Image 1 (cartoon, rainbow, N blue to C red):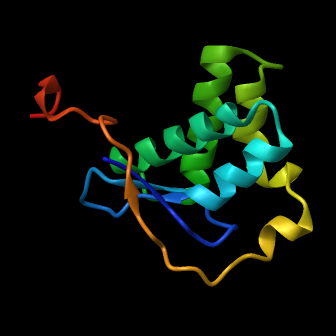
Image 2 (cartoon, rainbow, N blue to C red):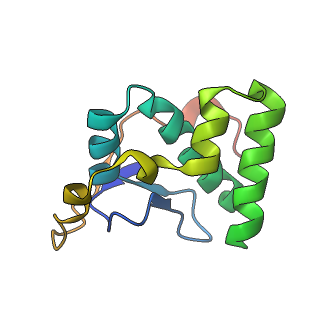
Length: 122
């Protein structure tokens, strides 16, 4: 299941271990969408990173490396998704984007992201 939530700007997303949930930082994605036309590449790389956590990879350094390698192998050097995996969305944000903290998490489930009737989960 995918949720959007107001997380600290230094956090792209998180996966509560032992669940099938991913919480994506709504504020970060909103800020990246305003400053970078290729913001979907950031969302892709963040979700891939969190999916690797769902597969049991816990070490952040290892997951970052795997995310980059998977993007590189599948999209090729110079593709904006590979760049997004290497830099993350923070590289294009202004200092003002980091100032609006202190809100509640305010989780919102993304409807139909994971269909229960799809049959691929045992």
